[in-house]
Image 1 (cartoon, rainbow, N blue to C red):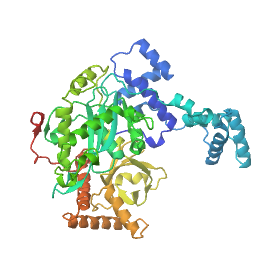
Image 2 (tube, rainbow, N blue to C red):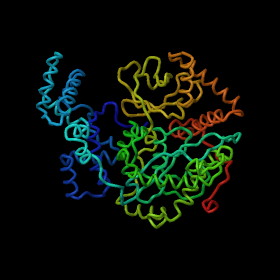
Image 3 (cartoon, rainbow, N blue to C red):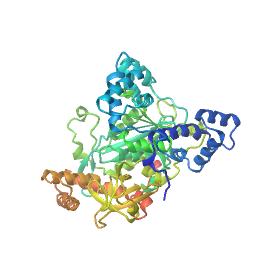
Image 4 (tube, one colour):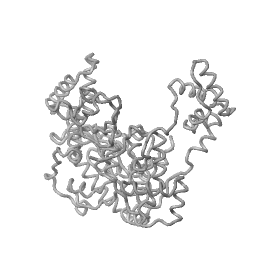
Length: 545
């Protein structure tokens, strides 16, 4: 069992305090001997006595994750009085009506208005300090825009740099998605399926591809989690699994990840996982694409190479002419993944980069040498996988744990049956037959369908089945009916697989999603089969280039 703090009891203030401590302690945590000046500076910056500082330092050395720096009793500070929902609403109304004015009223004026509202609603008025705290916790950029104007807010809160200039490896990594300019075919009948999605990560210092994830599904929080996993962990075994001979040395936890403002980059799972492992998330300003120039150029380079493959859609319809990409498509999903791997390892990394004037793999060696400390890996690889998965919060009912209208159960949940507190439930959309429940003491348990005879299904299949049932006018959740519908849909796909491209696509997406989770679930639950790539002939970088 992997021990972590009870995240459900951590207040926002306590968590931000731990994040601030991590930023100071991590750079000096593993030095052999701290100088008096380093210790004094750290204690002054954190407002700690030496005894408490060394206690936190020891905790972090034993377990180098942000949550190890939490105070022993997380949650609201002792003696803090929480406001009721009605009082909170009164304060929010006063801030909106009084504080957000161009005349820039004072906090006292806001507090006076709160007292008026509370008197009208027969409530006890909060204190002046309580109102100030809530103003301080509000979105300061929005408050500044309302009180001082958009131009002042922009100057105060929007970064003014044009691009990121970094000094060493894994200081800043950029991530983005693209729809590949190529149709793939199914592995059985070689019929055209669809254009897959590619999620790429680039190390800004060296321009090395830090990792990638290819999928038939639209980009989601799962795509982000899996590309981060590929980026952070060593890739030797990953290359062996795909029978590709080559060197891809990029690995390690980055200091910062630079992202755009897409929904999948704003998820709570990504925010939690990044903070837990000491990663800073930087979102580029809206409508300013040049802030993500490095990843945009990498995407252009990769798609430029793809345009020479059969089945390519080219960059636009005009340049395609009468060429039919679906008719000429020949590559399966796995073949495209291997082709991209060789393109990255054997060509892109080895060719001279126009901006750097040297190959990225040489720039990587220089960028690693420039680091003050070694590349760092996750404290616990299994826990790292879970930390970035999407999650929901659920109570454990007497008949099991309910998620997606389905029931899950394991005897390990018995002590919390019927308890009012919610538990954090993580899931992999590629296989929702097994979920992972974070216990009150931080341990994580795999929990399967309550009915063990249920087949493995993807979240995509589940949503398709629920949509089909609702189209028939069945609004209430019926788990048995959902699985009957999924089984019937699978039979339809099997019967129609030789007739329609959409059927090929559905079968391929389902098989790809479930197969992709086998190896990962083996590590987490020790009961899945490993992928078999023995039928693929090894390819080397030398043979490719």
